[in-house]
Length: 263
Length: 265
Image (cartoon, rainbow over all chains, first blue to last red; front, top):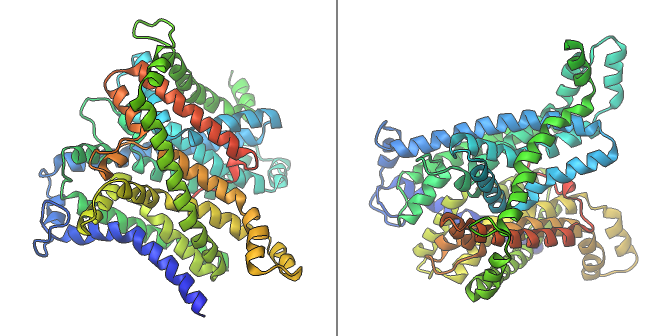
C-alpha cells in the first residue's frame, strides 16, 4: 500500500513539475501586467483585447498563418503519404526497403538539418522564400509520419477482401475506394493529426524557409518577441486557449477510443 | 491514352513515384547541397577550408563538445526520471494509465518556445538564477515525454512470462529487474535516447532563452552562421552535425527498427 502511494506520488510529482510552467502562464493570463510574474489584480482584459480586431493585427495574422499552413501541409502530406504507403505495400522487399530508408531520413535528421538543407535548396534554385516554401518544407517533414501511420494498417488488412471485391466485379478503383480506403482511414486520420501537431509546433524548419518578406507564424512571432526582451502579454491567453482546446479535443478522442474498445 | 493511364494507375506499385520524385527534390538533393556547400569557398571552388576553420576555432569546438555534454546529461536525466515513471505506469490499471500517458504528452501541444519562456518565468518566480541548471531543467522538461512514451510502449508489450519465469527460478526482485525487465526494455530505451539526444543537440534558441544568452549550443552556432550569410561554413558545421546524427543512429539501430518506435498517437 505504502509502495503504491509512493509510486503514484512520484508520477503526480513529475506531472506537477511538467505542468508548473503551463499553469503559471494560465494564471497570469488573467492579469494585465506586461511581465509574466507580476500580478496586478484579476482582469480578463488580455482575453478581450485578443479578440478585438485590429489591435493585435500581427499576432492574429501569425496565428492564421500557422493554422492555414498546418491544414494545407497536413492535407497534402496525408494524401501523398497514404498514396505512397499503398504503393510501398505493393512493392517487392528490396524497393520497399529503399523507399522506407529514404522515408526515415527526415524523421532522424533533426529540424535544423532539414531547415538548412531546404534553405540551401531554395537559395540555389533562386526560389523566393515565403508562404509556399514553408508549406513545402512542412510537407517534407510531415509526410514520413503519415506513411508510418498508414503502413501498419495495410499490413493488418486481410488481403483477401481486396481480391474478393475484384472477383465480385469491382474495378480496381472501386475496390480501392470501397475496401482499402475504409481500412486505412484510422491511420490516415492519426497521420493527419500528427502532421497538424508537428506543423503547428515547428520552429526550426520554418525559420529557415520563411524568408524575410515579413511573413510570420506563431513560432517566429514568439521568437522575434522573445529576442526583443519581452513576450507580448496576449500570448498568455492565446496559449491558454490553445491548451484548453487541445485538452478538450484529446478527452473527446480518448473517450471515443475507449468506448470503441469496450464494444 | 486514357487506357494507358488507367493501366498505370491500376498497378499500385507506381503509386510511390510521386513521393520518390518529391523526396529526391526535397530530401536527397538538399542534403547533397549541404555537402557541396560545405566543400566550397565563397567563389565556388573546392576547399577544405571550412572544416579547417572549425578545427582551428577553439570556440566552435568548445561549443560542439559542450552541446554533446548537455545532450548526454539531458538524456541520462530523462532516463532516470522517465524509466521509473513508465514502469509505474505499466503496473497501474490500464484505463487510468492511458489517461496519465496522455497527460505526459499533452504539454507538447503548447508551443515549444512558449513552454521555454514559461520555464524562464518559473525560475524567475522562484528566484532561481538562470544558467546551466535552468538549461538542463528546460531541456529535460521539453524532451521527457519523448523518453517516457517509447519505454512505456515496450514495457507494456513485454512478455510477462519471462518475469514470472525469473521469479520461479528464484530471482529476487532486483535480479528480476536487472536480468529480465531491463534487458527486454532496451529497444524502448534506445528509441527514447534517439528521440531525446538528437533534438537536444540540434535545438537552437531554447538555450539562449533559458540562460539569458550566456550559453550557446551548437545549433545556435550553425544558425548564426547561416543568418550572417556564411553559408559555406554553416553547411560544413551542419555536415559535422549530420555525421554525429548518422553515427548515433547507426549505433542505436543495431537492435532497433525505427519503424517500430511508435508514433505519439
